[in-house]
Length: 196
Image: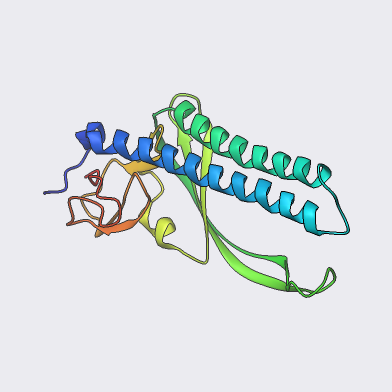
């Protein structure tokens, strides 16, 4: 398929709504499994440990299980609430940063992790609100966008599509964010159409 200038009408392909439905379903199933593990694990701990008895341990298990389910619900709702909007790349930045990283040996054992943060700032056309895309030690996304590029944020998918992809060799899948060859018609990982 030839790469055209403009936003792709392939976004209306049923594969995207199927992908979103599957993502929500698998997110819920994964959270449910974690919730059950937490409940069963804390119940067993309460029965076998000298530090905590049931029902106290079981209550903690239910609390953690509820947290997993709430995170899954929040993730699904935030995807549904996100809107489609158009914008433009207004800034790109490279910053050298550092942070403390625990070695896992003890509470005072840590080392300094140095990394490079690559960021791309996109401003919405209508509201003027800005959004920053960041990556650590990976300049792929940074190099993919240029200041002045027009982009569209696709609601639900929470991904960005460039208006002009005619000079690109790569393209990001708008469903799973996998990096693909611009010559491909579908994503090699999730099989959704590439928006080109």
